[in-house]
Length: 397
Image 1: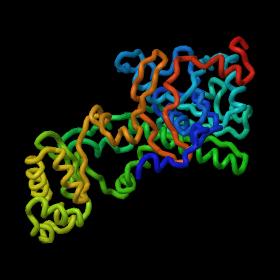
Image 2: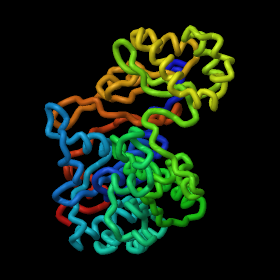
Image 3: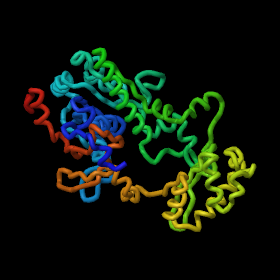
């Protein structure tokens, strides 16, 4: 399918499927801003509320080359408007409560009790807006023995069991190379907000949505917590799988690829390509369990075949045969991939200083209500006058 065919019935008069929804983003760093980023990308009017010192993400290095804008801020706060309010002060808090009266979703990701201490907890917000959808994202959740402990991304990765299976078999437990727990809890925060909004639209009832980084990690751990609870402890396998052989990173003559022979049918196709057609049905290799018992031999045969070929040629040969393979790229290489660009995953966006940067685009595509990077991450308080006037408050009120 061509891109223009997918979007042939696209509307141009909406920001996205959540057009008309207003979100108050009272968050910092990554998990909370990510939840609100998803909602903003989907077309919601997201008002990012920051104290005068600004969101932590604004100061995290590195800055985008040629600018003084943090990569974190540019990524996770695009498509939002910035309102600077010192919500620790009663007068500024009251302004936020007034805005909340005309909002749909309130998102915060501070330590349990922090927002209530400012008079902005769920019980406070529901007085101002009885049907508010109030999303709290924390390390450990709103209840449970550890609910008051500080919680951050690597701590949730560690406590969930994820580190124990990540890394090389002979190496130490290893965290993810991205903010994995923050990202997953942000996605669950956005999903939870939309589900609660659907319930509100049907019943008129608001509610408190509790998202924990730990819970998000456990949920997205592919059933491994269930195995662990039953006494089966998975081990680290690096780039391999216990149930798929051969599946690994292999070196071609000019760079690495990942090949995953997941099915017996895949092996039946691969064996002749490797010059070993008899192994397609050989009892030592024909089934997944057989190949697992001969993992080293399978890896050696495929590795030898790939090492004699350029990466582009190897990928084409295997893909033409219907086999799963992909080049192992750096982020810089991925950013130049024609497929990535065709999918609008890097969208040229002009910052306030006139610099154009390739901001990561929304993941989900909508044929009727397309989404895009509509605006760059805002300067601190950039929209104060605009927002306060919308709600009948001048900047001095």
